[in-house]
Length: 151
Image 1: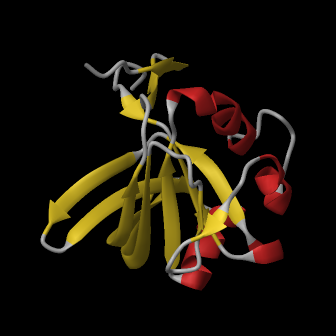
Image 2 (image 1 turned 90 degrees about the horizontal axis):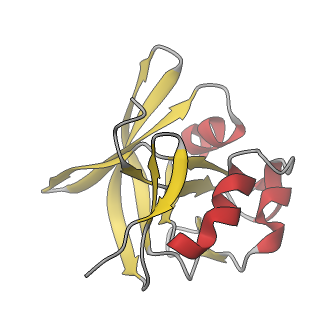
Image 3 (image 1 turned 120 degrees about the vertical axis):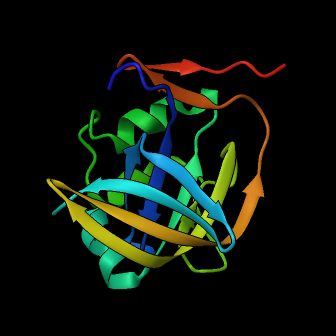
């Protein structure tokens, strides 16, 4: 699995003190009609339970200069819950989900379906709104965060 290069994203849900989010590298487009994507999240996490409760979530695909946020939301800096959001300028989107305004790309989704597979849940989100940023995307390859340079 370490040889599957993938984009790095923060999946977030909730508002104010109920905001929750985590870093994922399992974001995949599914179809364009209707526009849908999937994310895989470990069962029992605060973000997992928040998505089930709110039925909506934001996906902020990180830029190469946002490695610190990937680590923070990956739990490697010790921040938990709403305190993970303290170091960046988060904004609520049209679905009232947290989004990074300076992300490489941001997508807002309503929960279309979900399925438990082993220890994780696959959430299928119908994309309602998108925003494309600038820069180079952050990727995960062989267990390390790297920059994908665009031509």
